[in-house]
Amino acid sequence: MIKRKLNEVMLETKNLMLRPYKKSDAKFLVENYNNKAFLKNIPIMPYPYNLEDAKNFIKIAQFGLKKKIPTLELVVFLKSEKRVIGGVSLKCIDFKNKNAVSGSCLAKQYWGTKLIYEAKLELYKFAFKELKLVKISSKVLSHNIRSKKHLEKLAFTQQGYFQKDLYVKGKYLDVFYMELLKGNFKYKELKNKLF
Image (cartoon, rainbow, N blue to C red; front, side, top):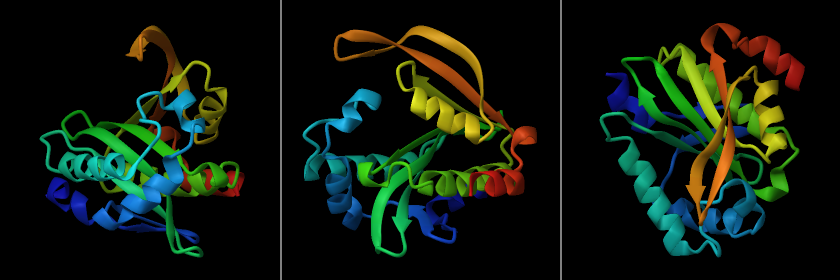
């Protein structure tokens, strides 16, 4: 039942709306992600990032909802500016084992604004309360210490360090393996601490 409703997920916060991708979001994706800054931490992202890349991503995001082990990709829509500023995701949602993998991306001009914390707090609350997950994990490239600290502020803990875990563009990359357990996710405490 929940799996069929993933394409209807709408989460709202004070500043944001989180919703599934629409075809009309493609132009915002190009504006947000056609930036070399993303290549360092998301090495599989194409550059230059063009309209065709954005349309393909949206198709993949929409198809991900239909898979046996679905992926939920949501835009981060900033209400005050009436525009998409990024995305958050729960990938590989495993309802049997009650876990998923978290990901996110935010337009560079919004880095440091705490908007990604606002988005992820709501996404994780939804994951634990509505989807009944018990664990959310994330892999962070070893050189991306900022992202690792970001996850730690959301109560993730490092559970491992995987050497040569990803092979991208001719080289191997090491990653931190991070986990957030349902019992460690204290929504109200985190919200008060982060804002």
